[in-house]
Length: 350
Image (cartoon, rainbow, N blue to C red; front, top):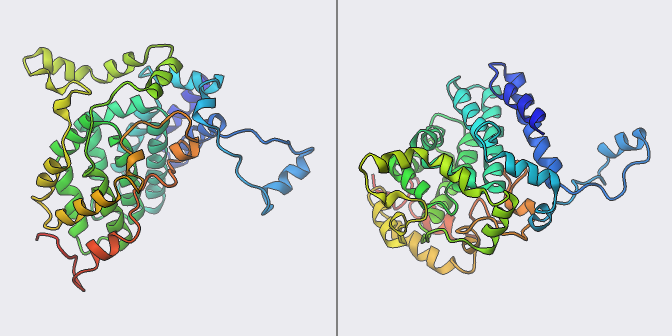
């Protein structure tokens, strides 16, 4: 596995779009091999296998369950490798994304950015400790740069999904998002007349997610099992990613920025007040959130991916999270937020 990751990382750091694409495919293929169940009955020969690829009856293999992955040797090896900077996939994808962002906008580059964002989303869901990377402003800023109004809607939509994933069960990351003027970036994109309706819907969905009440991460049974996968060394990765913040604490800053500290969390009321600086209809969002908090998907978004969920639900392959990310509020978003005043975005402070 180290050899495969090494080759993938070499391709991801290349200046050639073809090699970058190959590296992304190798990472996706590795995740697919780990997370998808093998076919129950293999094709008897190559000809039938090739026919099956073009057959309408052929389907994607079913996803494994995370509870089963704990006993999967390939998954355990992959998870342990993510402890080190040398083999951490999320770090390499972030570096790749930064280089792609500096190349300007064109069709090929835009497609590579979307593919990279999808893989970042999947890796962060499959390996939650890697979310600690986005507690650093330098990494969070990359997401915000990708929400520039001049970029294509596909990039904006994929960025919002990856951003949600980086904030899951991570109050400190949310504080970094706020410190980087993330709310200003999101609301400015929402107000822009050039922003497509589809992206505006996703922006409102993101705001629903952001307004959810926070709780300091607690060690649950799921977290205990995740630690067991790492051989009891999960804290080593968190400590490594947190090195900069520990240096700040030693230099004289208060220790209130420790991961999981209650002082890092904010209530819906506090976040409503912050968002109210940029939007005038935040109360409507809060009321809808209160109505759907327990009946919608929100109750599954504030905690780490639970052991026992399918990997397809966890979004490990290609960053797809059916029914969970993006956050959907059926019947609420178009009528209550986007459809009040014809010809303009309603309820938004200008």
